[in-house]
Length: 158
Image 1: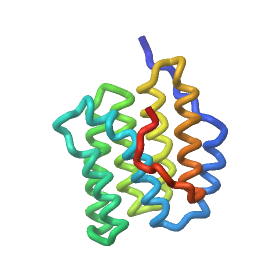
Image 2 (image 1 turned 120 degrees about the vertical axis):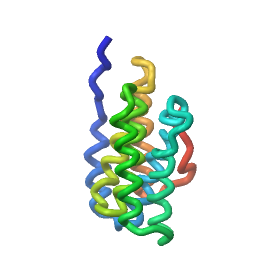
Image 3 (image 1 turned 90 degrees about the horizontal axis):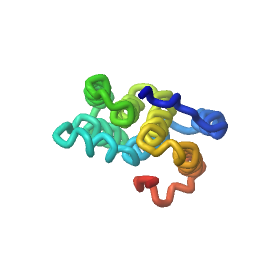
């Protein structure tokens, strides 16, 4: 059976508008947190593959000034390769979220892609009757984080 088509919520547009107002490091931190919230989806299926985790760590390392943008991009490319290798759409989306989180070190516009792929991972990892609710919950968390109400960041929505 084919996967259902991803359906986002209208809050996505408000998140994109709010993201345009943020500085580069804030967006990189937010992208890493968005990806970290769905990392378990990748790691539950790809137990030996560290590329998604390494990408999130690279994004965080760039924020702290511990690694270069070039090294963060290398980690992003590796996470995207892991996504292409997966035949599970939720696992692939989780890895793409991590890749875009690391790539935010290069271009801050990647942050909104990290957030969207995180929501896609949740959508495809949820039962059909829970998808709409879980997407709205995650988008609400993403919006609140960008507004500065980032308590509880890093926790998953399950």
